[in-house]
Image (cartoon, rainbow, N blue to C red; front, side, top):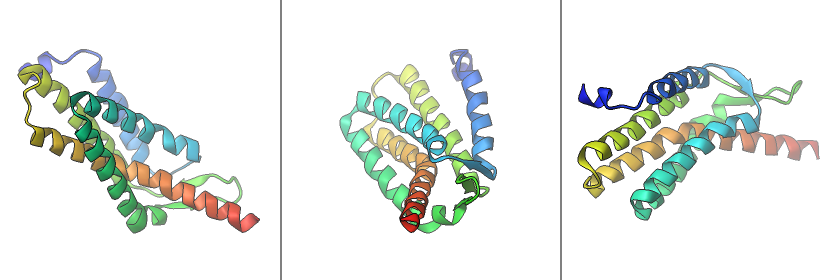
Amino acid sequence: MNILSGTPVWVFPLFVLLLTFSVWQSRARSASLKQLAILPLIFISVSLVRLANIDHLLSANYLLTLLAAAALFTAMRSTKKITRDENSSKLLLAKDYLRGIGIMLIFCCQYYLAARHAIVGSVLSFSEYTMISTALAIATSPMLSSVIAAAILQQRALTVRL
């Protein structure tokens, strides 16, 4: 309970906002490639900056894990979850709970890092940081894989037109 009482007030509206985004990301919807790319770019930037402030090796672990997981997600599932509406040239995203779960997992990891750092200081073990950076990468990968799959789909549509 001490952790919640020591949490800055702005974190609670952020939690509600991210919860709303996670529900929105989970439902079937249409979007453009630019709209799909906004949240992953924000989450990747925030995670990279935080991890780079701790240790550059964590940033490298994060990026390598993120790229590997995103490639795997793209190959296994994301290309089946996105189609292209030929009439409006928008991307149609199927219902996908992994994107929403990923957002909440990112929030939990970032909150954990901030809370542990506030309580313990900078004496967290490297293995604990490595687990968090890996979890952040895996949580971000479903959103990034959606962007990659959408970009591939649009590239194929452009190639067919030519």
